[in-house]
Image (cartoon, rainbow, N blue to C red; front, side):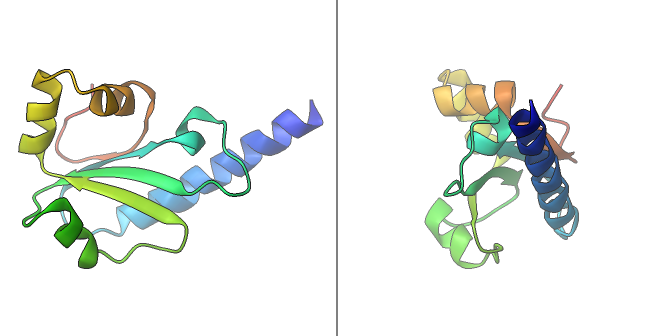
Length: 112
């Protein structure tokens, strides 16, 4: 039980750190912690995966060039229109992100 409690504490600490980073963003967005930390099956080599939905321009790759992420963080930056299109197509990534992701911020009211 000690190991499980330790992993829970590590996960909770990380969620707090990521939440602080997301709160510091100076634009409206919806942000979800996704991937292994959201699921709880992270390990020492896991990165911190975040889906950030906001009003971005350029390609998803170009968006990342102008986005300053802390070390170990990986972000997917999508617009709300891109998410809506993916939802209509029953995109597995989007549906699992909304089903299993940890809500960090929801300025756009996309998460119910």
